[in-house]
Length: 334
Image (cartoon, rainbow, N blue to C red):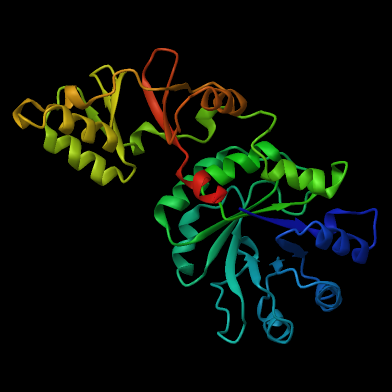
């Protein structure tokens, strides 16, 4: 996941000092907030003289057309317009280079992106736009998850309240880029903050239930559906390489993964008629409680002698309530 440094969040140093510090620490992107102020293009011209770090420009305006010529003359790598400030559908001329996105606040539904299918990404504002140092609103975890499901080919950027813990969760959810401002500049050094944003060692304020995939969206079969075809179809449609097995009280009975199917086939190779979902099922999978923290989840994973690709999530009654999978996190670490 790329880190986009919000350059105006540092109020103590000159813009040149900030940019050169970020350059020395090899930050991925420079995030520039433009609250309907054309002077930012003077800053962009200066920044281009100081470094070649890609620019991530976020424009808040009700008159986007006045920016198009400036964007053609001063191209940036990413440009985003705040959708709530627009009075009509945004149409950016083809001559404007760079990747294009729309920004939405927490209260705006992601369905707005239906109008912008030709755009490259969405920027989810997880705190109040323009307010520095706000707390990440956890309802945005669900928003990110739903956007990833509905628009799998589009990128997700997040701005607001991104600290070390939130950064870990966002990486795990497949977010492409997170904007960091107050957190980045309020740490002892930019290098220290960047390490925390990209590290697995984090403090914890969120629980697993805040960002898990809920059971309604998980590949699940009931223990009464002991047919091989049902298992295979559920795993195939789930596209995660496994399915959960629950009983009629929704309690977790076990899990069947692609690896479990392979082991079952080897066990019954001489008599495939003996192969049943029960034989294939792992009836004591590693699980996590829904109210456990991110740190507790990491401690559980680190204690395992085998790689953990996914975790069934249960509540205190043993009912299956969701899953956490680490496919996106593993991809991000490559």
